[in-house]
Length: 346
Image (spheres, rainbow, N blue to C red):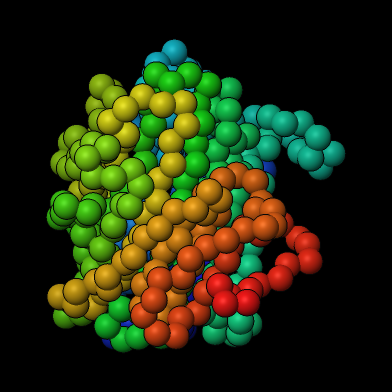
């Protein structure tokens, strides 16, 4: 899914563009191992791939450029896993360099299956939607080290000049063994600033500075470890060092932000809010609550109930909407059915 706040592509554009990948079919030598990868553009690239394509088949190309480690996505590291002929193990999705001979083989052979869309929606306007929602089951993109993994994405067009958009991202991952360490990763071009709630990304187009405030709500700050890798460390794949090709592209000076749970669990969930802000604008206050089936996030005039599980939510289902005036309420990941929405007073 690609979502945007508008179509101004000039140097003075204030529009936000975001992309989320959802799996599909994967084969051949040119597709990257990037199931579920996220990218965000606001006055320059805020979240973006770090790979540079210059020399095909080099150790850098096979172990970094085409691999999951160069993308903003989830990693789960089984220390014994091998990715074809690569020497490194980045914990990412499967590496496939063969290809199907027929459409029937592509559809029928699970080797080429890299995930499926669970749910997607946008609206209420078809032309200028207030929200764009997308969720994918990406379990099949990874090896048997995963029992289950889904990623949810909700893009909010806030209709504001100072904070034009926000993104709510959910990850629900269960590994085959608790000791397989999970890493929530985003990659960026400019040096990020670490905060108590996450990080602040930045970039600029001419004199216009854009920032992305990344607020991780789950796991809590005390329950997670953050590492920011810059310089040569950004191109180190768990002990294997790679050198990007000589280039003037900003990717060769990029940074990787890796967040992992402090405790070893088979199942871990992540809930993250991104806010794109103009210059030094302070981000909006975020209210957060959790139900048995969802994460409920409130900011600006929006309340979003994001399904936190990998299955669709069945009725009945109750959320408590925080007070604070009139708000739009968005319920995501609901199973089809005869739904009735009632307020507490009936």
